[in-house]
Image (tube, rainbow over all chains, first blue to last red; front, side):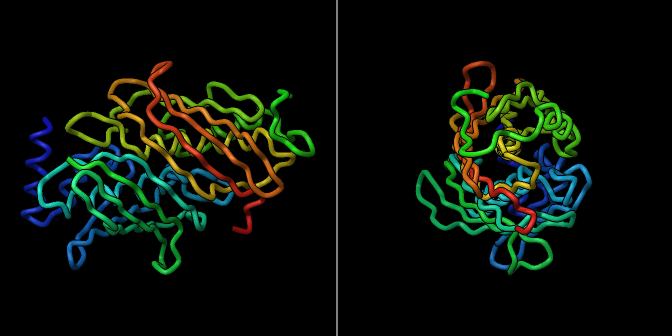
Length: 146
Length: 151
């Protein structure tokens, strides 16, 4: 089973089709996350707005947990995409700063591997709506490799 | 009021039943069938029943970390609502989570949060997530901004 998924990951990388990785992950399907590759192997994730993602009906605003889920997913996907050997990283910890409330709009996110060691990687991620210069949240996480 | 109430000034203003009703109407918590199982002043416990949609690693069935994030953020927010001196908007400023061990497939998840300090502008909350009674899968620290409607 793990081997199937690693094969799928390897295949997605060969065909430069990162969306194939997401389609195997139930929670990302539940959220409706999509992904595409930009220049230089950087992944750009999108989270189309849906009513079920709301956490504060008064504003309304997307649930902080949804934003956190998107940020962690982008970090994991970017690691899977960038590492030479196919591997399924495991999250050690995340630290999320919520900068603006996530409105009832589509959200995008992109990550950058800050440091990649032999056993652990540090990744920084930002999420925004409409204007990438006005992030709604930023996070960094540590991930166990291999 | 418990003697360890984190309040400096006025007592809590929102009836616990109102918070329960409010939580029951949050769309994303509804989508995950999450509900409050315990709410007292400063402390909230949420449960999330096992469901296939929360899997983050299809090779092992392990739960996506974002699900734990959602539970801890919500439980922490409810804990803050239970101690604030009047009805107001609050917003998570930051949330730091340590994933102590993988959340295994097939098991419900419980998140509990404790608002241990409330100042004029900021609430401080620590949280833990479990499977079963003693399998701790994550711990968290969060801060919330009070009167956040201008954020």
